[in-house]
Amino acid sequence: MLHDLRCWLVVGWRLTLYAAYRLGLREPPNMLDIRHEAAGMFSNILHWPASLRVVNPKNCPRNGPAIFVSNHLFFFDPTYAFRAITLATEEELEPYFMMRNDFFNQSAILRVIDVDILVSCLGAYGITRGDVKLSQLKPFLKLLKADESFIMFPGRTRSKSGLFMEYRDEIEDPGGASFFLNATQRGKDNVRVPAVPMARTYNPVHDQSAMAFGEPLYLPPGAKREEQREFDLELMDRMGDLVELNAAQLLAAILYLRCLHSVSTPLSIESATQKVRAILDAVPHRLQHPNLASDLIGEVTLSAKYLETSGQVRIEGGAITPDSDSILSNPDLENGFRKANPTKYLANQLIHLMDVVQELEKHALH
Image (cartoon, rainbow, N blue to C red; front, side, top):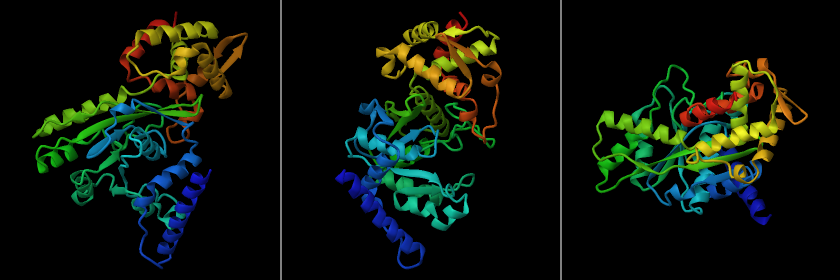
């Protein structure tokens, strides 16, 4: 309790200094030395550790230089990634951030506060989306040269439909970490900088996110442009493999496939559980939510009840009856896809996992 109070007081005082800066009374305050307290404040706001579980912390380097590359689902992803890294390293590593330099300037209130400048005080460096300048990339090279680390999210890939990555605005290439790795390794003899894949999987049934770390990847010294591109694509593949399977995704995908094939008969929770178990047994190498091993039928039941609250299924007599029209609908991405069609949103989380999809197609209709 005292630690929580201290975090709020420390952050509150620095925000007061920031307000004084916005009024022209002083220079912008340094906040890099209170990132631990800021993380403590966010722990209260976002209900950590209950809403955050770190997976494979052994894959997280305990010191820099390193680049952490993660998928992008929600607004607070940077704070989740930061906290996962500090937890995995027992506070030994506190990374910086790469972000759009106009991310927060989307409303009159945020423009008055200028949150983009505020987060820069906390260790975020901005880049201009669609027109990145070399001067904006240099701070990240300086960080790596100083044995520091930063978190980046591949450009314009924030998912609103549940897909692992969702390219928009005619973007077809993930961009990536190889530029920074190549430049840093070229400038520092005998130094190899890791790119660490990360992925956030959100489980709405438990209102909990799993932040998983993959094994670090290293760019070969002197890599040419094509090798760098292949490295970035491989990094994206590794990130995709870090999605954690849970009962909500698998049940949603089973129901979606049944609706897609006009199978409208009710599915008993017992039968659904058997199907989910068969799929999980076929892909033991995939990350799986820990509750699946101890209480699978309980997880499937909770998942069915979650979908029932959205009105997309009806549970009667221990059987699930889906609303095909609702489940097969395709809501607009900009108007709450996840809430409008949670079944499809959850099923979309698995589309890129071809071995899982094959097992779904094998078991969903039988």
